[in-house]
Length: 209
Image (cartoon, rainbow, N blue to C red; front, side):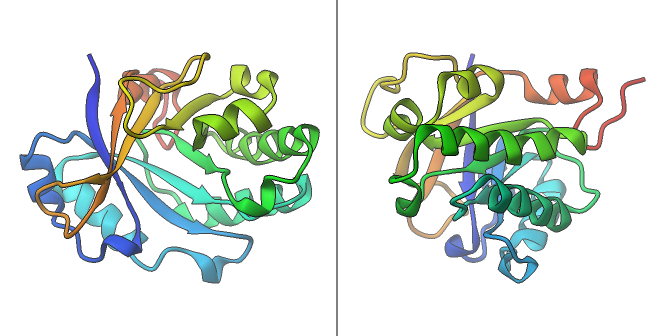
């Protein structure tokens, strides 16, 4: 059975996550920032994380990429790790790869970027996943990467994503209306028991006993 969640960033402003939880949502994916510099950390990340914890929501995070090489992607991962610090996450840490600047890159370069970013997260003890639109995943991300790493796929206005490989989460709309969020909101469904995975495998700040 799918679990309902949302994803937020500074663009949603002050989100009342207690109301979000009360509306039946179980998790929130929080934008931690973008790019290769800590100055690009999302200005609402710390507050959103604190409020999500207080509301009893499970939490994941994502980092928007502008990288055009594996070295730049690795640097983005380093900054992402710095931004999240020692926090615990019940949901994946995701590599958001969708920028128009990346469309013209070869699939090999995209694959090297995914491996560099996600590999850096895994070495630090995190559960890494890839986020993108279904067509970008299919057309640009090598199959080996989509088999190796979990996928959070975006596809709107459809009964199921037009994506023929496994995925753990689906962002099914960017125009959701959720109590506690002003304006439109991205809404998601999760199909894996991520909190159990993190605790059993000792990932994302949890320690396997």
